[in-house]
Image (cartoon, rainbow, N blue to C red; front, side, top):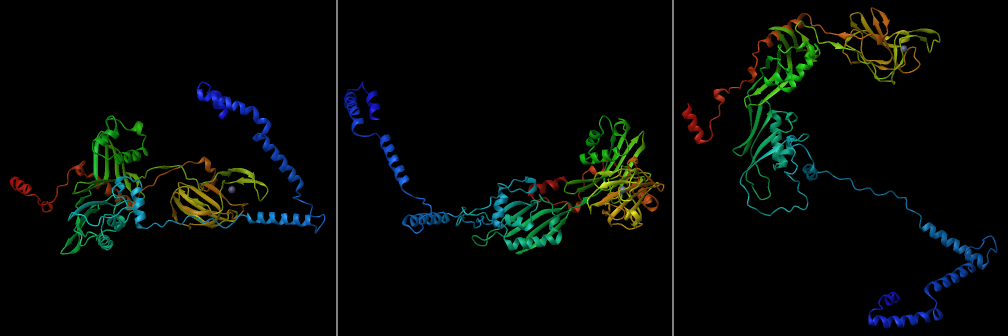
Length: 528
Ligand SMILES: [Zn+2]
């Protein structure tokens, strides 16, 4: 270091002197004192000679009992002890303690989660208090507090009240009162509750509920009020008109747009097109001069809200005459034509979801060993998988049937039937009506079968046919009393005036609310 400085600093006067002195010392150094590297090399040499002399690992089979042997044995024991001392500990690792989610923690989570406001999110509005929040000892307070609480999805009414600051006992009491009028589970999430809290009886105590009101159901407003120191429930039914909504109009350029413009809800137009599309080809069968006619379930509350439900009727008129009239009927909500013929159902369900392992036709029988007709198709399926009816029908046979083992045969009308063999268990009985997709039994290996599979057969007029060659269309036909009821309902629907349900509901005179403000009262008097 000095040497470098000396060489670089020749221009400085003092530096030059120093440089002269050092270069003198440099010449003298190698002769008297060995350099660091030389000293290290000498030390290494000495140490390695010592190690070579030191007999650290004597052969313990030689000179047993000698001093050299004892020293060797001692070294071995010492090193072994050292190695054993370093043996790792295989005790189980301690896991982090399980988090206990109590109410404050739950509120903290709630305040940090992201949820749509419409579902009652309170993100960022009511932050859960943590330990770092120090409550003020005393602060001036409003005597009354008006606030809104929203019932979130998966929320409970009691917890919502408690979040709004209602005391636990009072929240329970109010929940019980509300539950007496409407089941708490039926209150829609996103329902907003207006709450008025009164003055605290003591510092730190919960504010008592003065009033609370919310829309419990489409046709029910519930209010809880404090009267004479006690809470009382006040159910206020809302008048609801359920006249179905009927929309008629000319198709024009777009049936969808024309129907929407006439006031039909979007979902109803979609249902209309779907119902009609199942019967006719929408692209070719509808002309721009045609008239559409749709009737929808509709609810109107006196407070102005509306709720559109299912499509009840879909009609298409040409030249003032009905071309297509479809009405929803029955518990499964299918559409039927005015003649009572149900909507068509094409195709068959697969009886089991597996692939076909053996087709229809002549083949060598795996058990009997000779060529014979395979009268159905085999589906690969695991033991116990459910077997479904391929379409609606009646059970014509259910039980043991020779080589078929446990066997179910369904008849579907029109001379068609299906058979399901080798079942482990039968789930229907003879004479029973089955619906398309209904479970009729479970895959097994009964009868002449080498392993679990479904042998599926199709019959036409009693003889087996290749199931993959048959595609059939089913149509239900209403008859007798049901047809009469169907026709009566259709006639009833036809009497609805188009657009009647869109007019505003005129409130009953006795339900008209008295104006609250004096100026409105005077105004009302003047108008009268
Ligand atoms: Zn088979």
